[in-house]
Image (cartoon, rainbow, N blue to C red):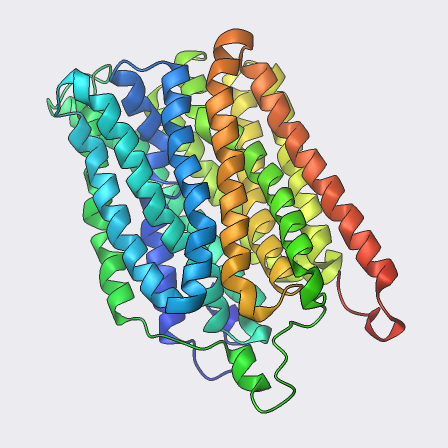
Length: 431
């Protein structure tokens, strides 16, 4: 996984290694691991229905979305390293409030859960908006695709482990007398692991250095241009940022339908055990590993946009059987297809959009990207809960698939138009 980063250089930057450690811990805990498996199940055990589960998830993502663009702009001023550190501290505080809510009177639980979602997602905005420009800054242009590939592979491997922990720790704790699986206790105890484990990224971030993009260093003393190869003129950047943000809005909105409600669907509709749900989610995360490692190859063969479009169509193909065939095995295969495509969809897309926007605005770019992604996730989480109650899960997952297909069409149209506009001197460059 790391050898691809060498790209002819004698050693891998130590801060790339630290960043991958942080990615691993976040994948085990919040970003695809323990939290993804049992957070909604914990809410169900507290007595919340799909509407309130969707609302709490939506509030968190709305806060995330609103925070992203200010964080992106602020990171351009104060530096991405400072925002990474601050974001992680806030994440730890917010994630600790989730299990703490279970200790409070029922009258206070909803307020504290909403507060924890808001605090955690402010921290997530501070952290995730800045990871892309930070990783871009500590890698050379030749290493960048491999670095994002390694990051996606790390998410897949450690998301697998985190999903297994999330699925199996509550039954284990229940067998040790912590409480029945129909009660909040086993889930609540497991959720305390999240803030404890996130102390490791706090330590790593304290040791990571501030950096200037290697691209900008290479350009120093030349024309002073900060525009990446293949990027559009600065005067057109705002419209392009908005377009790329809309594409990401649809992508994440589509995935959000499955990510938010899959475990609720399997638990309440198909009556699948917590351990089995965790195992399915673990396998789905691990299935993304080959795709993550294949990202450099896929982008060479299909181009950046082509690889993303392929991933989007695979995800849509997974959502449709999940929507219309209420069988656990079929739902599991559909869910795995969604996560199989996720590393390519995210990593290849971010490298692609960074290559077409001014480097000096990469913080703003990622702020807008993550902000609109957050709005996409929040929209499907909020309206999805009510859609499930009124119309069922089939409509929700179908809407998710349509969003992915629309995203693929938009990106394909842009890439095709970009190829037509390119001068003969640059026609050999990948789209």
